[in-house]
Image (cartoon, rainbow, N blue to C red; front, side):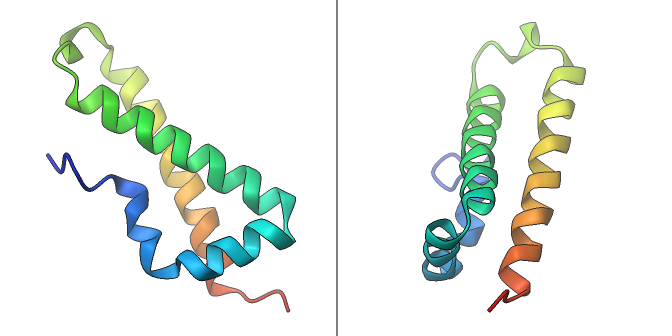
Length: 82
């Protein structure tokens, strides 16, 4: 368990580009914001002491949604719309 290194930190090296995209695209800003929120929630759920009361299906659905958002963010970072 990576308790001090949350998943969305993987985009840290691209932080300048992310900030640029957040300023220029409200869609990207919304997607990235949702991704951070979902990543934090997933991290909190997985590191919680009460994970046995949370259905696996629920955690898997959050993982899947987070993965979709991550892929979309990655697409934005790869493609330069300028």
